[in-house]
Image (tube, rainbow, N blue to C red; front, side):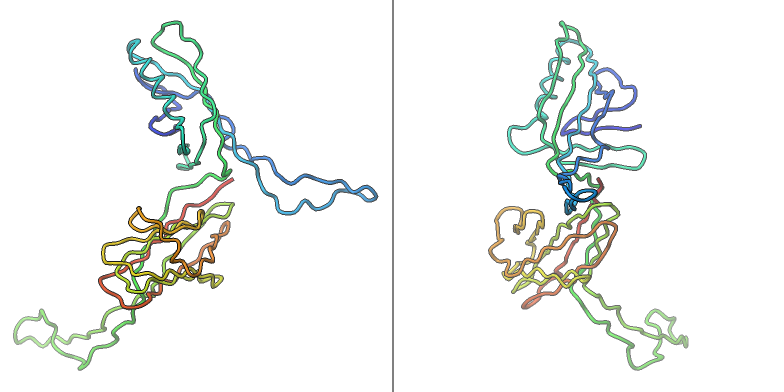
Length: 292
C-alpha cells in the first residue's frame, strides 16, 4: 500500500478508519520534469543545435484525498491541520512510500482546495505543490570513521601463555596486535542523478580537519579548534558550516571544493586531523541517493 507523508499528516492509499486521511489520486510524482534546454533548429541543415546539458525544471506533484470525521468538530479541526501544512516560511517534506521504499522531496505547498462540505463530517481536498529541486531522495545512509591509525602489529615475545589460561597449563598465545583504521568513510549513490553527502565532524581537534574525496582529490579544509563534545556540520548544498547546530562557522573553511557523488557511483572520504587530537574525533558521512 502506498502512503503520502506531508508534514504532520500521513495519507493512506487504502481504507482508513474514522478521523483518518486517505488520498485517491497522486499526480506528478513519477513524471520526468520537462527539460530546460530549448531546441534551436538549424536553418540550413537537418536537425537542431545541441542544447547542452539536459537540465530539468522543478517537479510539480499534487494529490487529491478525503477525510472522514467522527463529528463536525473533528472535520473542522482536520481542515485547520491540513492548511497548516503550508508554512508561511520554508518548505515541507513530502515522502511517498511504496513497495520499493520511501522517496522524499522538499516541497512548497502552493494551493490547497477544500470544496464546501455543506456542514458534513467528511470533506474532499486537493493539494498542489512545487519541488524546486526536481530530484526525489531515498533514505539517508550513514557511515562513521575515526582518525587514521596504524595497526600495532605482532606482539613480542611470541608464544607467551594466553592470559586466561588455566594456571600451569601450557597454552600458546599469538598476539597479533590491534587493527589499524584507514580514516575513510564511504558514500554510495544508487540513483540516476548526482547527490551530495552531509558531513559531520566531532571534536576534539585543536586545528580543525581536512576532508578529501578520494576519487577526485577534491578537498574541504576547516581550520578552527573543535572542542570535545562539539560537532561541526558541513552542508555542501548551501556551502555552509555550522557548529553545534547554532553558530555559522563557514568563515573557517579555508578550502571548499565541494564534490558531488555522481549518479550510480560511490567513493570514500578521507578524514585527516589538523593539530593535536584529544578524545575520539569522528567523521560521519550521510548520503541519500537521488532519483528523477
